Amino acid sequence: MTRDHVRSAAMGMGVVFLLVGILGMIPGITTQYGGMAFASGSEALLFGAFQVSVLLNLVYLAMGAAGIWMSRGIMSARNFLMGSGVVLLVMWLYGVIVGDSVANVLSTNASTNWLNLILGIIAVGLGVAYAMRHRGGDAVR
Image 1: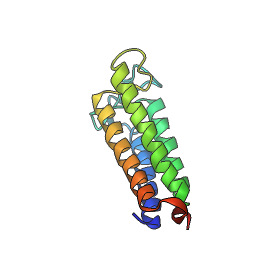
Image 2: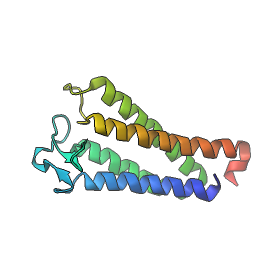
Image 3: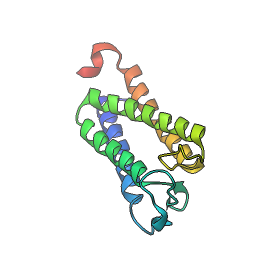
């Protein structure tokens, strides 16, 4: 993975997060849109499968904006990939632990948890791949 690749990967992940956040706010693409809540108790489903809430969409939008912004620099792009990946893995773990309880303030379901797990693994993997290829001071040139 080269310097340009890590920046492109961060930009790509940022765009994916932005799209997920935006699409989660569009009626029709998000089914049961009338049942969307700010946090827990939301019944809205992105593509009829991924449970979303306003809060969850805002998290995705913030991560997307951060990814696009941080893709401008090599180290910031790598840090974004690793950091956003860790955030997604924490969100996955949180979703698995709280399940359908009232503690599920992000309003996630099993599909959303799988999405977070997959995107988290991809993001961390890309960040680690770059870090392993460019150890030491070589990564900042």
